[in-house]
Length: 307
Image (tube, rainbow, N blue to C red; front, side, top):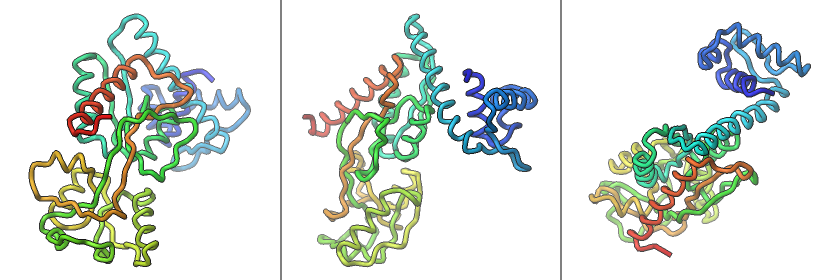
C-alpha cells in the first residue's frame, strides 16, 4: 500500500463520504473514487460499502484501515526525523491532552516550546484518556499526556513514562448545604446531584461501586460534562458535587469551592506521558516531552512534593 492510498482510505473512512473526503484531501471526487476502486481491484477485496448516505468500511476495510493509519503515522514521523536530521526547525506535532492536566502543565510547557521552536505547529487535542489512547494507537497522535483513572486498562502496545501523582477530592460550592458541615459521611451523599464525565467512563462506575459496597443506594442523578471550566462553574454555584485535584484547589485564590473529606471517594491518578511502544518519538516530540517533564518537576518542587 502506498502512502497516497493510505491517506485516501483513511480520509474516506473518517468522513464517510467521497465528496467530503475528496474535499479534505484537496482532490476531485472522481480521482478519489478511481483511486479506491483501483486499489480494491489490485487486492481483490472490497474495502467500502457504498450506500445512499455515504461509504462505510467493510470488515476487510476496517482491518486494512488500521494498517493504513500506521503507514500514515510512520510517514509523518519519517519526515519529521529527516527534517530534524537536516537541522530544520519546522514541522508539526499532534498531541493528546487529558482533562486533568490541561489547566497548568500543558500551557506552560507549550509556551516554553513555542519560544524554543517558533516555527513548529503544535496541535493539542483535549480529551479523555481512553479516547486519546485509541487515537494514539491509530497513529493520529505523537503522544498523550494524561492522568487516567486507576481502573483504565492500558493497551500492551503503549508505553508510559510517569510524571507525578494527582490527588482528587470531592468538592462542592460554598453555598451547597454540605459545605458548612464538619463531618460528612457517605450516607449524607445519597440522593445528591453529581457532576460526571460522559457515560461510559470509569468515574461513574467507580462512584456507584463505592456506594453499593457500603450497602447504600448508588447515585443515579448526574449532570454530565466534558468541560473542566463548566464543571468548576457548576460546582461553584452549588448545583452539584464534583471532583477536583488537590493541586488545582491549592492554586485557587477564592473560597467559593470547598473540599469534602470523604476518604472512600478520594482518588489518586498517575499522570503520565504515553507513547506507542514500537515507535520512536520524533526529535521535535522529544524536545516537547522534555519541557513537559521540566514543568512537572518544577510543579512538584513548588508544591513540596519533590522526590
